Image (cartoon, rainbow, N blue to C red):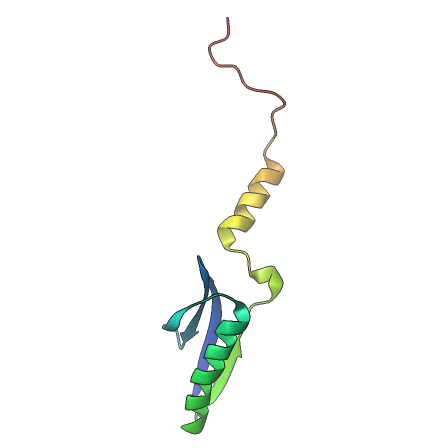
Length: 89
């Protein structure tokens, strides 16, 4: 049996929907709105006799990878108290 996979993915300005690794639709304000769009698209596949799978990330997966890396870097890098003086006497 054929199967289509729909992925809800965090985009820079919202959420996007991919069907079989191809972006469909626009950018949605919320994860729920993207899910509704994916469900509508999936319903057309179902009516054609195709199986569907819809993947939606959890809350911990919402943050972009760069933001997670930034937080990790901030937690392990030493902090400076006060200003660093360049060209001191």
